[in-house]
Length: 248
Length: 313
Image (cartoon, rainbow over all chains, first blue to last red):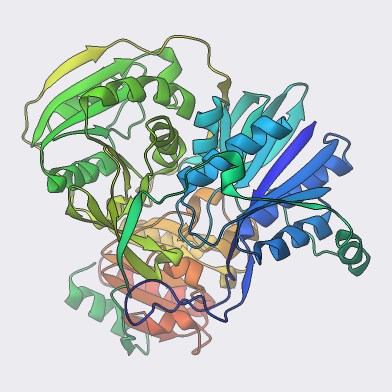
């Protein structure tokens, strides 16, 4: 079984987000960028499937500027076999990402595509589901557990009420939630080995996909702020304050 | 302009998230219809018909729709979109699951988790875990939008819309429901509760959640948790409040032993009053709390319980 893992390079989750003063967006100049945390979980899952003998080949793909190659190298160092870099400096919306991925799927014929459920920059939570629709493949989103069972997958999904288990026939789309696994750190020998793995260079035009955005960002603003209130000394004071506020 | 709102329900009860999504739809202007897709969900359609401002309710009853899985929902909604300019659904795990499939089939870029409607094509949505608010304008012919329920007031009851029946999807689906393990609780639902009390890593264990559950029962509150507490296995995943869990905005949010990671704040900072109980006075949670109590939670929470008992709760 061949597994495709799309990954996105995003602002590192530990970096404080700063909105630009002209409200045109978030300041990404000279800040640490990393692989989207949910995508690390997808990469880990694919590598584990290969280690378990379930996956025969694993491929990572990233769409973005030259630096997206670093993100691809990270995945290769974690154990993915080879990479595809679709180079563009433009911002690519989930719909266009899904279209590029569809073209890659048609060329590579994977049996499974594992994606992070959302990227922590735009928080869209769309790409996996969109890819599922474009390919007419079934999907199991927000995966918390995943077991391969012949030519289908049984996936436990994190839903609002608890865990829902679904069975999808392969080929399929899975999107990962936080507790599917704990991604490994790449070892130094594996980082060295990853340098010799191949990364194929592509562009959106190679796949004949129009990436013109459908959404225009009118502005990006700071959220309404909250300020620190007062400290209370004991339970009696707290209960009195909450009664005054009328919330209890 | 005609707008379709997809109802959130469990085949018995229409969820409040639907009423809030109707409010967002009405703000866009135009006729608002509600789709109730489910199995044996006639009573839900009747409840939806009572929401004020709704033109009609479309009821699609079919075995494949019982769990509202994405592939089945796609089969029902995509053909309906010939008659609509926009489709809205709450950004619950159900809505998040099926809506992007509809968008892709319509060749539309979805607008996720809106918190404001500026006009029929312009919306406000949080990005970067709510650390920035983006105003985006869609150039697509049709709009596919998920709505963050906590950002909108619930549409009032008092309507009397007609209910139309639709045929269910045909053809075999490639995904099927196996089982469900839903948390059972007599407490209110996390996203709908007026008061939420959440525990973090500081709780130390799942057993220790008993002390906040007692306070929750006194106040009629829901119990939540930070990601750290869920990852540590103290409580199930559906307790999680945060960027990737549930977003809540109750009247009162009590954070117990929660340091206040950005990820958690994203899920609760729109609460009206925030109380933080933490022994670390430098914990970031205190920077956004209206009332901070620097104390060891294992003495503070029982004290709070005793004080509430004294006050007649």
